[in-house]
Amino acid sequence: MGKINYLITANNQDFINKMNEVKGEISKTAGLAKSTAGAFGGLGTAVAGAFSVAAVSALGKEIIKVRGDVQALEQSFNVLAGAKGGALFEEIRRFAVETPLGMQELAKSAQTLLSFNVEAERIMPLLRQIGDISMGDSQKMQSLTLAFAQMSSTGKLMGQDLLQMVNAGFNPLSVIAEKTGKSIGDLRKEMESGAISAEMVADAFATATAEGGKFNGMLAEQSKGIKGMLSNFEGAVEDMFNKIGEQSEGIITGAIGVATDLVENYEQVGKVLRRFQEIKEHWAIPTQICVLAHVTAQMKAVRQGAPCDLIFQSIAGSQKGNEAFGFSAATLEEARQLLLKEGTAEGPNVMYFETGQGSELSSNAHHDTDQVTMEARCYGFAKRFQPFLVNTVVGFIGPEYLYDARQVTRAGLEDHFMGKLTGISMGCDCCYTNHMKADQNDIENLASLLTMAGCNYFMGIPHGDDIMLNYQTTGFRETAALREITGKTAIPEFQKWLDKMGFTENGKLTKKAGDGSSLLF
Image (cartoon, rainbow, N blue to C red; front, side, top):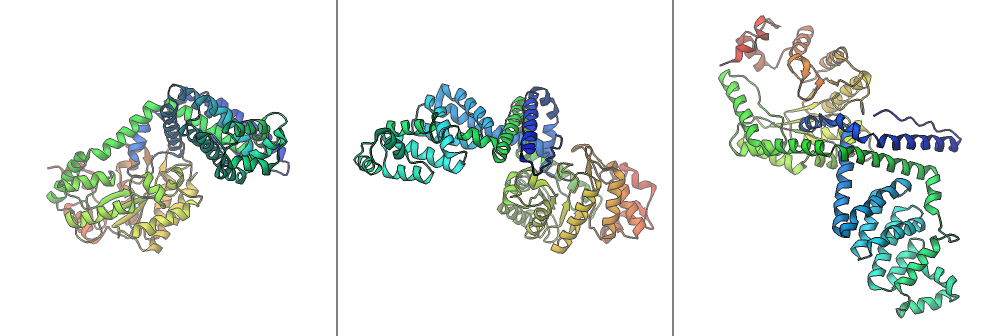
């Protein structure tokens, strides 16, 4: 998705004109939903990859979220309004695009009215009237809707309903007084005796918003201002995302199914762990085994007897972000205690976490906080569980949040130092997505800087090409080269094993190091 740049000057009209242009382009783009659906062919892989890092891009995740929310609303209207629900919701959706009121708040008001047995045919006229009277204020909209619905259910205006309406900026007795010539005091007495019917109040709403009424055309006027224009724009974008999501619904549901299978198919996780354990034991490798599946799948596998040294999970810097990953702090503590009791690792450090700047923003879980602060919160959260390693996957989130190599380099160094200051064992996956303005040279530069800074861990993937998640990272040769250049070694136990197996000699790789058949048995 291209960037949208706002040039705000002292001339507000220029800004408004530009917003109109952008809104028009968004509306055009919405019509391309069907052709855009093909772009999501790899969504299944992306969702599957979310178990290692926040793999789904901001755009894709937002489309999925919007379509899911809209689908849930559609279903609720089908239940509340029966056969008329679909047509009613479509009217609400169009109304949301045209006004400062969002689809969610309009839908909530409609659901309230339907729940109090207001007829489906009356919903849209009432939403328009209440919207005008509320002047686009969502809180006033909800208050007026609830008061009107309560009054409709009893058939008469009561003191509590009147107070709620007045607090929201509308006194129906004032309108009734103008029409009847009665004083508000007399009308209050009539209300106390139950003489002000729901029909009289409904007529007051209609009169106040009809031509010549005090609130006539208020929503239209609100739409002309900057705030209204921005709201309309957001509504148009949301509508576009929903249309794309609707056209891609089969792909999305299939992708979610893939992710669900990864959680539920814990037997496969167990098989992989058992094979890793066989290799480790046969060759007496001083290492820790781990499978990058969802924490709950790993826990199931361990409870079924699978060997496991480390429990993995991607983590975020907010509760909302972690909930988007499908776990809580309690889940991680349960996993830690399980592995301390039934795991195969030596020592108390049995957790492996991955993080990365931007993951909270991609799931709208940042609470208007910058991504560096959110990343710092990850490390404080991680420390609670005494991790063996925390690995920031610094460039994987993509250019939506880290645009180019300079930003990735900055983020990688920031993350390393924040982790070290927090007192955790810190690694870095020096990587980049293929649609980012970065290349292998940039990543090697970052790895060099982090080596000098004392980074504990780099990712090692054959040829630096992660074919599952489709991004570029460091291979085994980069780590070996950096050790040779700086005089560093692997941890002593592992370095001794490398020497014993003939993979290294005098601190350098041998020809045998590249021969994978050396570990066959």
